[in-house]
Length: 122
Length: 224
Image 1 (tube, rainbow over the protein chains, first blue to last red):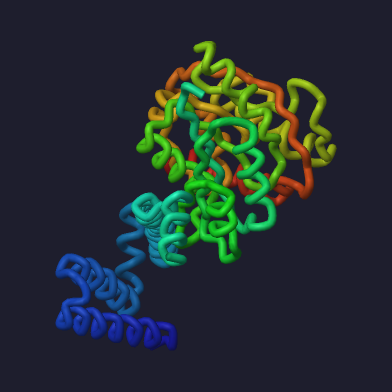
Image 2 (cartoon, each protein chain N blue to C red):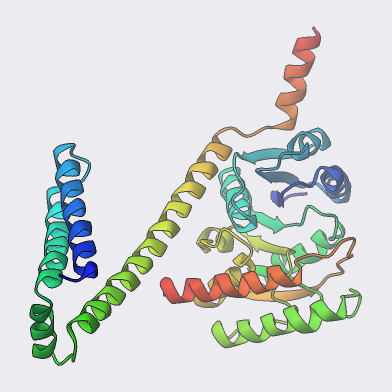
């Protein structure tokens, strides 16, 4: 067995353990846990049987298994970055709305201020 | 004055100038003034209040576009018939407010945009003029098809109707271009009025100019 295979297997093993733990503590949803379990099981299978990945790659017209994994990885990352951007933008918008609401609900009005000051003097 | 005019002044760390700006506007006419303190840590809101403006405080900084939108919402809720956007740093002369409002009072347009290029009374730093403002004008012409002579001037006047229809989603500096986009998309009638801007310190620097363009591109990319 090659060192890289051991490394990947160990990584997948611990990742699966983490998913189990998160699921038990109800930090992640069942569907999230399912998706990630499939991903890490896939990693485990590919690292144990590199030829399996090559076979899948060939069947979709890609020469090497590792290339297919890279292509898919890049796609997933791109979409994740895009989603993170959109999410961030949404959060910023929500924050602005919140700040605006708070500002408008508590205006400082000059006359009132003077009146409250003169009251204090009295 | 028979019309209710609200002057909206976004301010971020402008304690040194905001008092004089508010007082000069009050001297120039019967206007209601709202200063939106955009999360300043200095005395901006205290000084503005003492000078006689209504003050709204953003607890954290959200950008000039966000501050303008906050002021607009407040003015619209307080019977504004006309709204004027004004800068807090003392670049604008209070006397120009009347000049901006005139075409609106006469019903000639719904929005009056201040322009530094209609006459040559403003002395612009040449680098800023040719590297930032002129390209921004071209950019606007390409994207919104509007033939304006000045795209990033903070001085403008709007009718209640026009202000209510505009949606300002850009929190940061690109809101000036966004206002033009909204005018174009919603077929709001507009006119340009020559204004003089005095540069005490520079307005938006070159990097900020780049940031505006970056903001705009990102916005067009992700939220078509």
